[in-house]
Image (cartoon, each protein chain N blue to C red):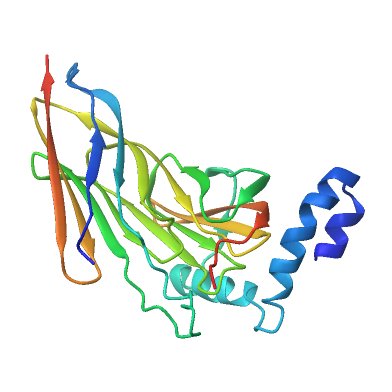
Length: 109
Length: 146
């Protein structure tokens, strides 16, 4: 189900060194829990994003393990410290093996 | 559990709860879920003592829609926080592992709740000890589908 998956991330464009910034991420995904049944009573197979990571200049910020209890269109908000200018890389891992990623640059003065 | 809650509620809240009572009843035939959460916690902590106070779990008191319940956790000095929803068919919700560039050890997300239940957050601290917090959320419409 790798269709219509679109990551969206909000990171400030500028910050001062060592500042704490807030990051918000959202990815459009059905997050089929595996608990639901279709019209004929057959279970709909589970299909979720099972892991999300955020890294800054190859250093980890947060690594989340997702279970089916995470809502449709998984949303995360968290805080990071930015020691220097660089790039945030966000990665989502799908049950079907697909990997979605996006990155955001930030300028630190 | 529902009955006890209703007794202390106003008429308006009781009405709102009617729906959740129905949703909850459909799960009544399944085994006690609370023990699943306790089992999972015991497995993570290895039976170590669990403290309270250094972790904050923020959740709405009443969630109209169990499909997206906004929650946030904050535990200064934690290396990992795991969330459980002990009334869900599968209690595990998510685990946040914090890296070296994580500022405050906090995170917010949105979760599914099958019915009125307790949410438990378990934090593993830097010194290896554990902290827990729990919150009760009343759910009007369960988020389990089906």
